[in-house]
Length: 390
Image (cartoon, rainbow, N blue to C red; front, top):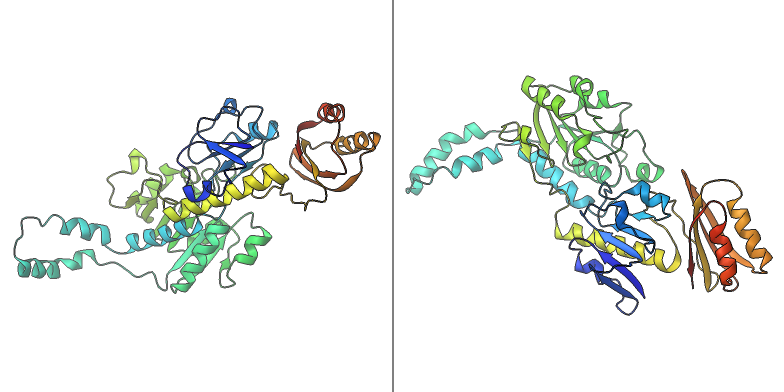
């Protein structure tokens, strides 16, 4: 029986994918095999020795102590792309709200509570509508910064709406490049993208390399009247530089999912309360993806969509499998295999993968090792965690 501790309210659609005969899922479990959470801020001390994996039902993992997990040999799973459509639709909403006098018009209409005559109201609105005139997004240029799961969907949507799309991604993966519509023109740097774009939307993870990526120097290159949208992470944008650009008129609007007191009550800011992925569908999709990944890891040791461990998948060739995480140093794997050979245990199949300082191995073997052999493997220099899957 696998035990999964949950934090936050996880989608029932996802949790129902844990078979009740094989999994105990609850928020009060003290010795879980896995932890599943959404926005709860997890501390390193919360990760006990029994924890083999952590699943974040969303894309970001800023609320998980990833480095501490790596040291403990615990992969952290997330759900990249599961909330992409929700964010994509909100980006479109933000572009439309920033282009048309929608919010100002709605606010104005709601001030007319003293009027009781339908005809007079219609006449007044006909006269006042000129104050809320906006522009269309068709034919405008959208700059997409970050061309992963969300960015590529945003780019495709913009093309379908008749926009021109330019993109920039300093770390574009092969998979992302295949997803990207061919009509997207790739820019060599951020400055050239801002110089061409009427709208710029950000879709990057929060890393040391992306902190304040949009700063004073980049904004100085922006096309006059540009609208900047941030539904990624707050720290990617230097807020002080954005406010200066708004005050000078260089930026016409800032649309953000990360309000701060300095951004409130500004006509040139549209601030939303962290609702980028707040749809029932996105919450279901994220939970389903993470549950499926946790199940495959707990049962088979396979790893998909981990932010700190290498992607590793091996079809089962025997009833006994060793899943071993170790420091990415020479001789550790050969020492483990030597221990198995000394015990006359045949290796049916295996895979070894590494990522930065961590290595991960799946080894299918012919029989269950003795406790003595298992203890020798655990004591092998470099081994961090050993799991026996049978």
